[in-house]
Length: 247
View (cartoon, rainbow, N blue to C red):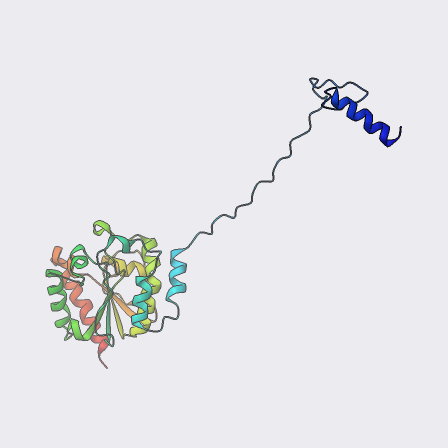
């Protein structure tokens, strides 16, 4: 059949109302095929698990190589892995003379400290002044005081070991920058950071190390106000500090 004849026949069928072409063999459209084609499964998307952040490791990286005390303060203020800062009113970084021979590392600030923005407020401040004055030191000019963490924990709770481990690199760098002759560990938190969790009563007055500097644990004034029987041990430790400062 030539082209013109085929075209004429097709146009004739369209005029008759034909709407589709069918084959020579009938097809039952309602009959299911013997086998259904298998659906293709999409490959599951590979999502990398977020890498866990170790706050203590991040603190070591941040503290390493900080060139000055002011830069250390700024780094701690901006350290985003410490949740304590969000609950505290003030950051209490340090007080005293940066060139002091005696560096005091205190426990976390109290609620009163947090409210005033200063360490050792009230009776505890008066007592610590008397303690160091007894060995010829003025707290404001002859010592340098910094807390183990600059933020008051919620409800004045004890610091967790994770929080102490996180703050320790900053305190170590702080000691390196101040370069004191003696470090006084004033309370359980500093002792847990540098000596171990053996209890302040057992460690009281025994020389240890805070970084490369000689350190001695001493009862904090808050504890001495509650238990006067410990004042003798604290006095003996203060005499050891006085002896260590002699030329």
